[in-house]
Image (cartoon, rainbow, N blue to C red):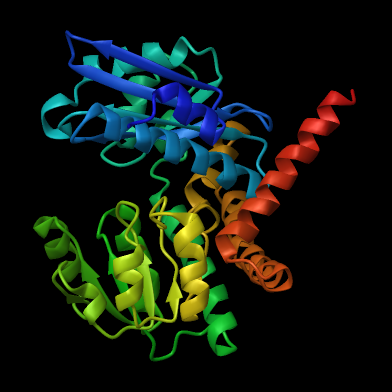
Length: 357
């Protein structure tokens, strides 16, 4: 029997879920607010053609929860939220569509601040910004920080280097091989960092146009089919598309030493697959830690944007990754759980601090 939305909210600790629809523009939106202990919830707006409304709800709940952990472990004074919009981006995106959505965001009075995510852009944020001030990731000419993808990719690169240091004793990749699954904006920026370091990169994506773009930019990159990727030999797996690719079937096939990528919710079931990775000796960099570069960047935008400051904070992902590896060993737990404990402790400590005022 499928759980109700309220049951799922209670199980995952959500504060609020808002359903929005507008027949004129075709807008169907779910805004999930997980936790606002540290501050207003900040998280991107994802536009995706979900198979069902139930699937969209689950995605919103999981993604918003991940944002809470992401902000907490990154030391940001922000909570976790996420919005998912249901439908075909090619057919729906328009000025009225985004402005209507902006009105819904504005009705939450700052409890949720939106940003870019899958199938949304700085231009879309500009339209949203016509109806609300609770939006980040605006174009640079509009006073924003623009596309957060380069910062997300840089954070992944930092976490990947920390994992290399853990696995091989130094953070240089040398003649290592990396499979990047997903050639979107973040994946392409990550490939750029890796190619520059001389890494042999394999890439796969369901979008053929993206793969053509990657080959034009980086001729040395080898395109591989999506099917059977875990039959290949490579050192690092970098999931940079949708979640749950680290599951029982894929783990049993994996030959890699490290998983370090930008996708959210990479573990299909963190309680099952976190321990499985430990048993197999695969180093896993928790997703909400390694992919926090984008939200770090836009959090700086809220304070008055400074690119150098944003970059310096993103670079801290390297040291934080090593700390989590140490804690996981000390407490004999998988790295995802170690990272969650650090995030949860910070939330609890700040909650207690505020109660004591």
